[in-house]
Length: 263
Image 1 (cartoon, rainbow, N blue to C red):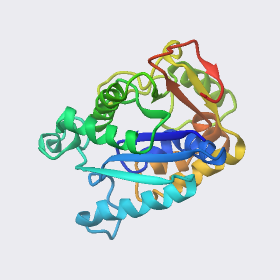
Image 2 (image 1 turned 30 degrees about the horizontal axis):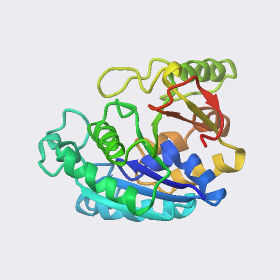
Image 3 (image 1 turned 30 degrees about the vertical axis):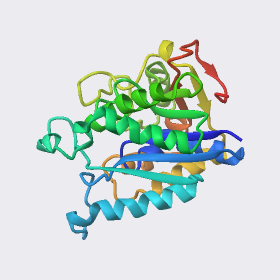
Image 4 (image 1 turned 60 degrees about the vertical axis):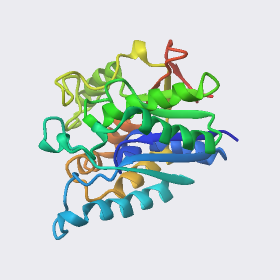
């Protein structure tokens, strides 16, 4: 049995980014643990809900998604959502983006030790798309991994920029609407989302039933209509095309990319 620990920024990030890998690990009999950095309190507030209750609402959604995926344990670090880049909320001293790096890394390292982790997954150096909390996930994850040493396998979830171009061209040739997805998609910092394929080590292709699990995990986060809602609005073909492979960098073993289970 392999012990996996995933570090994510907000409720729903696990569903959109790594739920397929998590579900496949669970199916193989591995232990799957998620560390969640923030409460997601600055996400979309659904109609009829008091904004003060959003964090609690999203926690319930997250717990439902964890059941769908097969996550064995959730550890909440308890930081406040930093909000998008440039928001006034970035100045909140309790926001994750302002956390003491050493203390936050030790919190994560403590869980890694408790779980006797074999594989630790966090984000690429730009947090995929430049969100302050995602950037901090990378910084904290890298520091925590360094505390554990080289015996810990460290993977960084990312998006394949080269595959985005291929996906877009294929979808357009099929007459399909790709929505927000395309080779010109940029992050909060104005840079392209993700990493070039030359920096990616692993492509985990999700079988059909795992893609269905990923869709149901996203459905659990129904309140987040601005991002999750867009993904759920995609046709089945486009959903599988865009979200049916999960990509990982591996700093200790940088390439070339392999389409395989990363163990």
